[in-house]
Image (cartoon, rainbow, N blue to C red):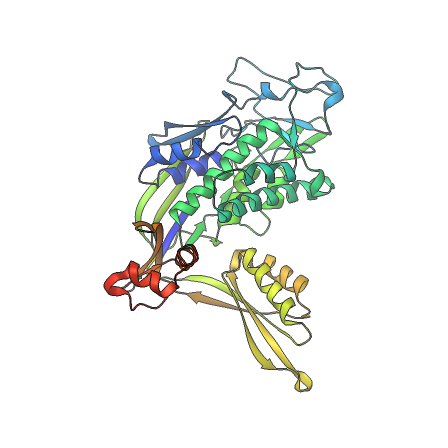
Length: 453
């Protein structure tokens, strides 16, 4: 099984995760070029070599309209605070290269370093006027518009918006305002779109069968804002990391950002110790500041053949739902991240014909799936089984054919190797050429045309 393990012993931020995953890709320059031609408004991503505690790695910086994010880009005049809380750490702030990112939005606490590398301290006091550059502010609707215009697959767009949705939900909960009233600062939005898009694109490229994340070091200490003293992790980060193993420590500062937290929680199959695995490649994504410990996210990609992973199976019985309603519930669960959803016909109480709904999901997704099952079915009870799952390692190859580029799925492990062209590509070619899927498959497989489609 192709396994990605993320070591977050120094927290996580969007740029650190991007850099760590980038080091796992064979052609980094090609991937960086791909990221920079996506057309994210005003954004350029720069890849730089970096070293922490003698370890070499990669640092990613995001430049918006030619400038790397800094406090100076966020001045607000006294009358234009937008219920905004600019906070300053009383100790040391972990600077991952993003003073402002998706999680630090309007109606949120913006964390800043007490000392800045651009020439001195920069303070915010209630009522103090600042030089002001007009910036637009984007909500989820505007972010959706930006993402819909990027040349990406629907699957990657769905991932990007789901991560933004987790951040917006956290902000909504913390500040007691509806999600549609959460607004992201223009420059912070572009920076966050770049980070989240890069991670989602790299995850799609690497295509791990499972992602295991270490317990997350969130940092410690407090931040001071106009309304008082707030704890680390920031409230939005703490909300996102509910049900995730986290810890503090002696390092004072915000080690895990809201964007980092949302990306980890979205992609994690589970959280825990590194499994027994045969490591194939290792990546180091570096933060900006120096600490006694190496300030990085470490990504290890390898095989855990024969080990298997743990999945939850959620089961419920329904005897008063239409076929259409059951179909809608199944589609909704799959779109939300279920590994598999299927139904079995069964006889229920009072001799009624009914349906048994089975939902397979990663343990980290269990609570979300339970909520969706209760929301979209009429069941009043759900059973749970925890199982070990064994799967072949899967990868996708893009093959040039007389029909153009076609994807081929490669599955291997346990002494078995299988290849199969993607059904969606075969179906598309069949429609375009007015041929049957069997004819298209026979022409692609050649001598292997007897394979089932």
